[in-house]
Image (cartoon, rainbow, N blue to C red):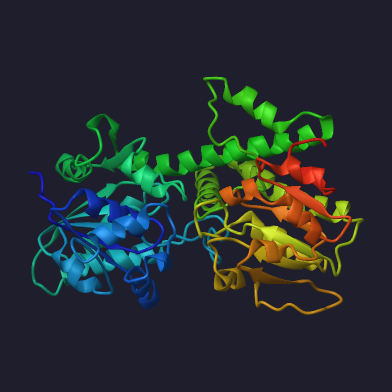
Length: 468
């Protein structure tokens, strides 16, 4: 029998849980959606009256929060209460790569998954559908089911709760997450119980065509998420590997990209060259995939996917080396403006951003960095780069952040574009050229639209994948 879903609890108010639950609440006014988290600061940020200060920046998210929060969308630390009352519970907690122990550096750390599952087993009433929303290794559902079965006997209610476990991975592109949620390519639901699958399916049918809702077994659903991210990352590494060949041979990566993307068998998505992929998923999921392949003895497959990560790291190293070489083989004591610190445009997420490693390498060579990003706050940059200090130090560089792009380029020897923010397509190069110290260099890693205008004002230009 299909369980009617009236109350949803989402454990985890991060980049996946927050936006996903906001859209579900927006589309399903008959469902009460409660998002819970153990972080007081995160919950306070979600409940802020200043919608420009939400913990996550995604175009369109603030408008949904304004419509739904306090009506059928709630953010709180009332974890026990909302687990007890929920018909369906989404697990959307962090699954970082393990730093120590077996599988360190590759396997996912499932500590938070286990803690959440144990809480669910102890607190749930009646029948509850558990939905894996976090990106998880294949067969994690087995672990969840074993914990549920062996912990529910300690349920203080004296009841004998029952559970179904589903896999419902997210396929969101940060910076476009709300659009992805409103108009998904597909919704994937993996499970063993048809009734449970249909209960979740009924939620999505409020705004998604049935033909776009795919159902599989649990293991196929879990693996599909890892595979999708691995394929996308592979495309990024592939086009980035060709960018260096274009620079060496005289080819233009944009022309090569257009020729490749025009092939219907390949398509034109995820063929934008850049300083490397970032975000919370690509690297973590490929490392997880590599670990699984090694676990099952598939060494050649593991090595294949390892090369995708190798190329990504090589690209960031290469860009830092290009800057060093173009600035006469030394950047000690030189000022360099960094335009863009988020791993991509339309997000404030800096996790695994290529800008982090590039900035660190430049500072190791003694450069002083002026960092400007329209969405990344100073405290986040400090978390990624270390304490903010801007002082003369003969052997070590430093960084400072700026709220004004044109102040950031004052008296710099070079400018590096690392994030594809739209505002960088319309820069006043005439003004910038008067502020920079000659001979000044502009390094464009994002194929900025009007970058060639900079050359007219005497600026030296290096464009990723272009032999100039």
